[in-house]
Length: 324
Image (cartoon, one colour):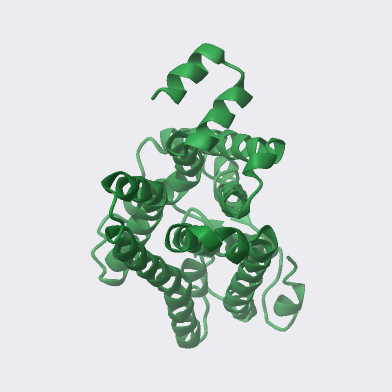
C-alpha cells in the first residue's frame, strides 16, 4: 500500500519515519521474541497443513471448510504482519520504520485483526444454518454463496480500515516520533501528531465498535437461536451432538474476544500501570489464537482430524489421535 499521496500534502518527510520503543526496560525481552517466533512457526505449520488437507480432499470442499480456510488465511496473514518485524527491531535494535512501512503495517495489522472478528462471525453463520435448517443447508449455504459472503466481508473490512489509516497518514508529525508500542498501532501513532486528533479518536472508536461489537453481537444472537433450537430436539443424543458441534467455534470465539475486550476495557479505564508488561501480554494474547485455531479445529472436528493425521503419514500416531 502506498501512502505517498497522503504525505505529499503535509510537512512530513519519508527519511524521518518512526521509532518503535516498546520493551526498552522489559527484562528478558529476547525470551519474549523467541516465544513469539515459536508461536509464529507453529501457526504457519498448523494453518498451512489445514489448507493443504482441505485442498487435497474434495469431501472437505464445502461451505463450512471454505469459511475455515478463510480463517486460516487470515490467521497466517495476521501473525505475519506482527511477529517477523519484531525480531530485527527488538533483538538487533533496528527500531526505525519509514512512514510508508509504518502506515502499511498499521493498515494490514488492523485489517487482518478485524478480519479475524468477521471470520468468526462467518463460522457462526455456518453453524446457524447447519443446526437450525439442516435439511436446507445444501441449498441455503452453497460454495458460491459462501464465496460471495467472504468477498463481501473482505471488501467491507478494507473500507472500514483504509479511511482511519489514510487520515492518520495525512496528519503532521512535527514532534516526537517514538511510538510506545511493538508495532505501528493506529492509536499509538496518531497521538504523536501535532494537530487536533479528536476526529481521529472518534473515528477509531466508532470503527472498533463496528468491527468488534458488530460480529460479537451477531455471534451471541446466533448462539441464542441455536440453543433454543437444540433444546427443542427430543433426542438427548442428538441434542448433545448439536452442542458439541458448537463447542469448537465457541472455543475460538473465547480465545479471540476475551483478551481483546479486556485490553480495550483496561486501556480505556487507564488501569494499566506497567505499559511494557501489558504490551507484552497483549502481543502474546492476540497472536495465540492464530496458532491455536487450526489445532482446535483439527482435534475437535472428526472428519478433519482423520484427514489431518492421514496427511501427516504417521499410522500409529494417527490411530492414537483418532481414538483421542
